[in-house]
Image (cartoon, rainbow, N blue to C red; front, side, top):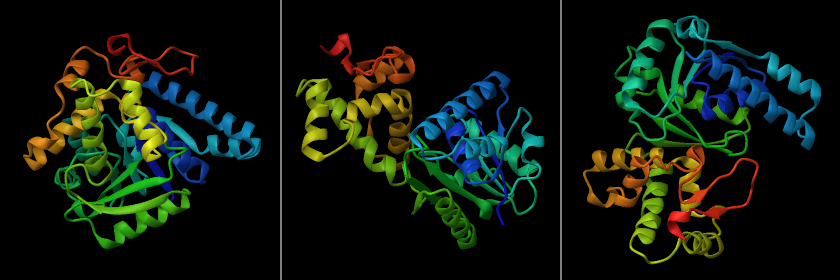
Length: 296
């Protein structure tokens, strides 16, 4: 029975994952080597709970109870020693993830399930870094975790049916909708999404249409809540580039080759929301969507 959850990584995804588990009544260890990042994560979680209280979706008492379920820890070994499930939500970097999974495997109790929030890296490859590949699974939450209902659950080559069933049921307890897929590059979410984003960038690169026009066509014509270029900014252009490279390497197909404009923007540090500029510019406190000067 899953009781104690350890979440590794206190960034945007990690603090969101910790939030939903704590709100569902689980005991959560939020782990990050950076103490300042942990403080920032707890502050963010607190603000998000305050918004929920203001909207009436939870009470002040429920907020206090949920916050009391979260413990912050800088030491991975101590943080996972009593875990029933560990969810890794570190940066999307294969070397880093393999290193973390090796540490998790050595420190976590026997029978503990090891999950990764990776959006594109092979679950089978990650599992191979452990001595318990049958207990390794992908648990891909969407951003923002509090709002998005989907959890893409990815079976590695050795993942057992029992582990899959456990994670499916657990996702439902979080109020999420689980979808189970198999371990191929990009899984389903990014195998379909990233080529669309890449094609939108190619359309801009080739002068077919401007930023606003591309996004407006997809929003009003295809009923997408956010245009592909705005979504790319939201995801992070560096993350989009990384996932496209995973797809290209995994399938060996030139159709996944990232647009040169995307490559140049990442090289220039124009990463979208996180850097303040991508296809749009982002000013603190402003909700107005303004096309970057580069594309006007």
